[in-house]
Length: 402
Image (tube, rainbow, N blue to C red; front, side):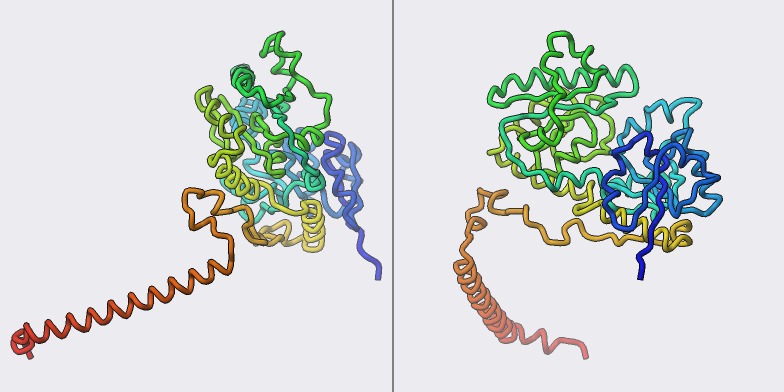
């Protein structure tokens, strides 16, 4: 029996060539990409895959493929940020169009549950959003961490969509630089967008470096400070304490355990971020683990997206008319919670530090016997009290109406 080949057209592969690279390892998928895919009249495929359906060159192809009832999967390529949605000139202008409001594709492959809920809040059909994770983040699982006292300070490739936002991002990075000078035991490594370098001044640009590969830096970084960007999710997935700095104080579409919106909150956040021995740091790190799982689905996203593609092709009617999710939605902790260590989070409670299972079992039995004795004492007292009531208040029984 021969296995089926699923023909997948990558509509915007010429714009983001590395976005779909992990999917080439999925058995049974035949990926074809490039500008030729936009000529839908001669395109032969079972499914179309894209990462930006709002591009004017790609939108007509979507309409034609939908008319041919070919399923289209939108593979989200990064975070959804407040400014991307609401201040981006692609949407916030007379000639613009709302982004993700709503999505035209048959299904949307989302980073995690949180991104799915965001898209649903924009008016998208609940069953149109599938939780897959991001294949381009799967490489993180192969990174072997060797943390040093290195702090990665980075910005999004587009740190702002207006001159005011760029100025605020530059002010945030300047505040970070000034505050980090108090932590001489940590070495900063800068990766900033080109638009921020002139804003930081001539004396600061010498400290800005981008030559080292990102995976190499994440291997050694003990903390990450960034403006809202997908880098934050990458760092959190590696359990690197991550601080998101946003001096625009926009609503947080990207969730984090450490967040600074002004110089005052930055100073306190840095102290908690860089002092890993403190109790507050440990508690925030546990919360960050939860937020990471909420925002990026654990496990192999490549396998899940490959499975979703095959399900959509094998069930075209269900793909085009969403009546339920094709992929199951599961708990964020299917294997159980291992990071939530009560002894470490509550050192002020000595009883929680007992790790001897035999001692704990013995204490449990002693407490059980004490509870039984107390319960028996309570019952004996109630019996004696009821006898005393009957002896001294017999008239109550005699005067009771019949």
